[in-house]
Length: 536
Image: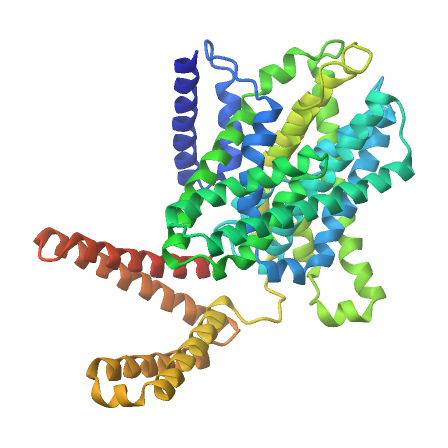
């Protein structure tokens, strides 16, 4: 049994790698390609049926994926766009759940309002990985990506809370709005408190114990599980605990992590999160036989019809919400107009269309119990699971494939009052080098006069200050400036490639230690990654 399970996992991983590479060749976002690949594999005769246990998603996959998303989210951007993030993460989730509940009760025979809210809580949250992977490599304003990332961090928690209350109402037959509102506040606030408390405990461990880069890296993997388990043990929001704790530790990490720890942890996390995301999306596609076989009194055609109706409904709801939520507060509040640049109809449309569903929706649907409190089968469970599968498939494929086209057609431009990334990076570099030169002159005047190496260090720093100043002066935020910048990046990438070839030639000569050559190669990798990140 163990051997066959291990072989199945290895086979799925190999399939993930092949599908991701094929998706890159075809320029298709990998979550879309993996779901379609899993769907195709589900029709292969003789392939063992793969059923996802809900605990596998909630306990194994969800904590590290949420933690990694929180860790890489900019706290400054998150706080700056907290108003639109909150409107999407809380307002849109509640609005979607409400509309889905009443529409489902009206069009699906046997659906109660509580079951409608249950379905709404399941299919309301968009998936962060799907949206960001589709946007990767496409030029979109930083505001759009920051709001999408911030929304995805919070809406998982708000939708799960709606799901919990709706599930309790179905099982008990009772639903009290006042009690639900009070429980919502308690579950959310205490989840935040648990996450912050556990995160600060890990911060103290990193700071005061004699850890190593390897230990620090392992501790970063332990942290999200501890946050989630502690919060869930007391029936608080484990999702909000992981998100709040991840944001806090990310904000404090520069105080406790050295360069070796950051490089090691970032590399390990990048690989692990890729594997977890890949497995989850291919497993979503493999759930089709399980979703179909338990439809019971509903025909496949009826179930597909309900699924398509709900897919269209959640897409329309998000679009209808986006434009009033984006512009009405600006019309009513002068302070909002002063503090936030207008998103424009292009940015609002892109945000509205980037509502692909994914991992959390499937995990929530699978976690609906098989039996109700009276021992009978849970009402409409299999239909809820099938509708969720269709919504995930339709939104991922339809919106995911069309989103890059919409971005190109709308010709969306940056409406931010900040400088381009290249100018910001040059400004930071200028500030750091200026401070370093001033420190050298103030603290080491004698050494500068007597030690040639230290004097050359000062010269190098001053040269960098001069070059960076000229770079800043040449960067203009117009089309000619962007063309100049793109040409500069192309030349720089070409030069880095020449340096890499020279490094390969030195390695063949065997004249230098491999350690020295590896360090230089790592620096070239960092320089190349920095340029490509700016060009995204």
